[in-house]
Amino acid sequence: MKKFFETLSNIWKIEDLRVRITNTFLFLLIYRIGSFVVLPGIDPASLTNQKGKEGLMGLLNMFAGGSFSRESIFALGVMPYISASIVVQLLGIAVPYFTKLQKEGESGRNKLNQWTRYLTIAITALQAIGYVSSQVSPDAKLVAEPFFTVMSVFVLTAGTLFVMWLGEKITDKGIGNGISLIIMVGIIAQLPDALVQEFTSRVKGVGGPFVFVVEIIALIAVVMFTILIVQGTRKIAVQYAKRIVGNKQYGGVRQYIPLKVNAAGVMPIIFAQALMFLPGMVSQFWPSAASSGILIALSDYTSWGHNLLFAVLIIIFTYFYTAITVNPKQMSDDMKKNSGFIPGVKPGDATTKFIDDVISKITLPGSIFLAIIAILPAIAAIFQVYGPFARFFGGTSLIILVGVVLDTLQQIESHLLMRHYDGLMKTGRIKGRTAIPTAAGTTPPAI
Image (cartoon, rainbow, N blue to C red):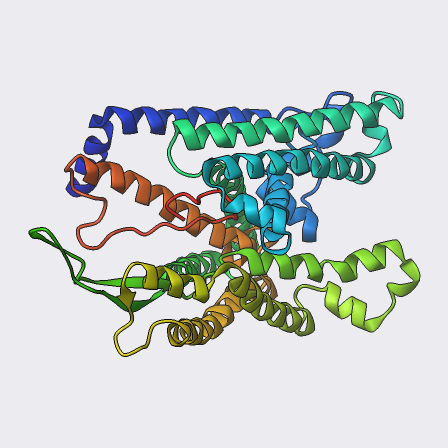
């Protein structure tokens, strides 16, 4: 405990770090206040009895910090920006023009960021139209159509752009990745109510306080398991040749290439989850198909068929996303240019094949563990864990929380060590990783 308070004191002594942490809290406070501001033209009294969202809507509501169900000006949150970033990132692999921009340094990154912003506006406008038509009941509208829809689309688009601007300001003036922190705060905002509801349901219903304590212990164990998956690396030793320049010797040292066990991050879950919502959407748009046994089984996220297909899709997407983001050929070429080699492996194609084999071997257990984490909320729901609380037992939300917290702590530790203070841990170093994808061509923060 003494070490903890001493670390807090050291953090507060560093003026730059103190200002950055304060700025981060203030920007996040602005975001949380805005999430309670209802769209103009909506009767706030119509929201008092609104129930929590389930399925895709519940997931979006969690990422938006409850703004989605409150019909707030920030209802769409930063998800349109995340979607635009993913699209631009994939375009950087498939389209030569965007691939060229990725290699143009700072000017290329600026152009890609500009493309991401334009695409964000387009995606937000389309999602805003769908949101107003599906989520806002006619009785809640105080303004006649079509003016209400047009006004709401402009407000929701402006709200998403403002949240995106807040994220950029947190990155520049605060601590950590701003967009990731905004998503994390939105997720954490749902935790207190979920805990209270789960505790109440256990005390008044089945299990009692003992079962609630067991659930908390299980949640801690899942978080520790997720940290192991996020932090897990396979180090490949690289030896650099000695070079004598004048009276100085360069190279001759052994370094390591850290290959992530889960190099794809949270993206496979996002892609697989998007596909798993298709059966439910088909049932809504074509009621005649709703009676199909296959659609009913796939729409029920607690059924074994749904979870088995979900796990298989995650494994497939993990291999796919790892293949398009990790380039063994480029690693081999970079080592060759810097006079580096893997001991016992010939430079060139042999090195490329060796790295590719290692990636393939570690991706399989990584994808399986990721699939297990993804289906844990469904397993928790089978044991009658309260819906919103069950989402914290795994899935996208837990991986984002773990990744963002590690990334933020790593940045704080860097500030402490740079000024010759003790780090946050007595031994080892905190290694962060980005919880969400950055726009193609941008440099991820310390993930």
